[in-house]
Image (tube, rainbow, N blue to C red; front, side, top):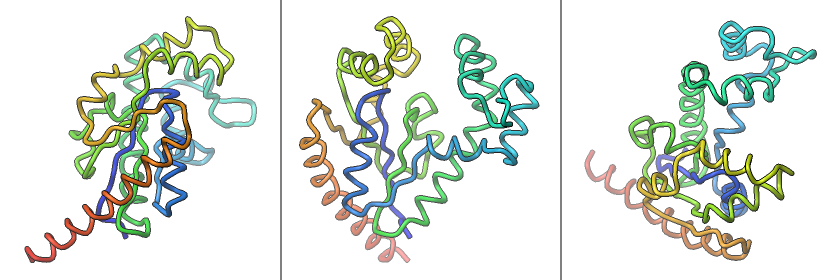
Length: 212
């Protein structure tokens, strides 16, 4: 069971998945908010029923599964709808993230939370011991989005602008990994931080034991 939890975050197309994979290769337990967000709206899940009750059958596909594109179009330019969706999903996601991290083997676990800054940071995730931010220049993010998703530059810029700013993410960071586009750099950063986090988790455990 992991008593030490790292929150991993970064902007869209910043390299979070690559850094997450580097930690997983080192045997670190990972809980990913995006994966959980998909799982909790599978057919039969209470969250899906609440989403349909709020937004209507139009957000379902012919197969009864959530039509993410339709829902995204619905909320993208409507803050009230976006807030309503977050009230349904976010508490469930936070609870499941915490439970999975606590259940993970090893001295520490990582909770990958793309919208950590937007979601209230430490105020809503008080169980995070440290926050790790993957930092990428906005221009590089936009170029990756265009290449990865096959979209135009205008849409890429709009997607980036819809998230927290680079400065807002860096303001909540305890640790920062600059992603310059080289996988070897991310792997080396993960190995260095893994050593640091294992030491911190041991120190925290010893401190807790000593206080009992």
